[in-house]
Length: 378
Image 1 (cartoon, rainbow, N blue to C red):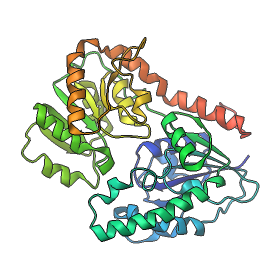
Image 2 (image 1 turned 90 degrees about the horizontal axis):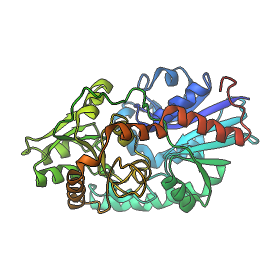
Image 3 (image 1 turned 30 degrees about the vertical axis):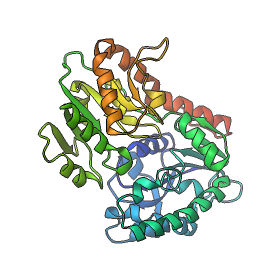
Image 4 (image 1 turned 90 degrees about the vertical axis):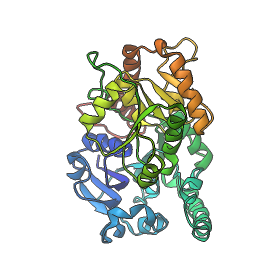
């Protein structure tokens, strides 16, 4: 059985690319289709695929502005032809790749991280800092892309959602049902070390994007006088630096290696996660290191972080339901009042629910149910 892979864009190794990595490992040598690829930006197993890209990837300097080509992506996708003779297309999509056109008779199974957030519910985050006329124009264009996204939803034969939250969004956006398979988290690497003591700082590991609400964390730590370390890069980083300029206890560390992040997970008091995220890998990585999580309790964290008041379950963190700095303040205060109730060993054990092995078992089970021949070694 001949398999091809598809992914929106390949410019870094973030959560979606970690799913793609496992797919590339399961089907080595499969051709891979993507809007944009920056050579050397992904794991070797991905780079070794036979990669086909759209014309967008050939634009000079595309790595610095690929997000802004979003309105062109439906057109670019229409120009992209599947060149090999294949039996199955396995896509991983959070933007347009669920709409790739495959030859007649080819089964298309899409691992959907989310219906594109640019047009389904979080577009205001991206329009907020734009000039008014440009924002208005983008809203009109977004409505057209939203119609296209809905109209092409039936190019997928079967959807897999990365959480029950996203399964609900797929049902709302596309009127389709889906299986739920949680993304893989490297819980072998991100693990606790009982020799490392917890320190008095809070941690964020996140891209500096508007919807991540890192500004809420800075404001909350300003109000409470707490220490905060923020790891990550993104388009909002300089704005956040200005916001934290007069706060000596708030450190924006930018890019950090996996080894440095591991040390921070093991030593932080807790991870803060103020975003409404589709799944959220950082909270699981932190929990795998025994760190509790203070999270906005909507989205993936409602499923991955066990709240302090969950009946009959060992808590792994705290949910707060008001996505504002004041809401996060209340979450931190609730966490600090109950710190003795959090057991690092139990938190790390819970995180194994989301291990790479769990992902592979669940993903291959769904593929087999859909008639896809899985590699014999599994």
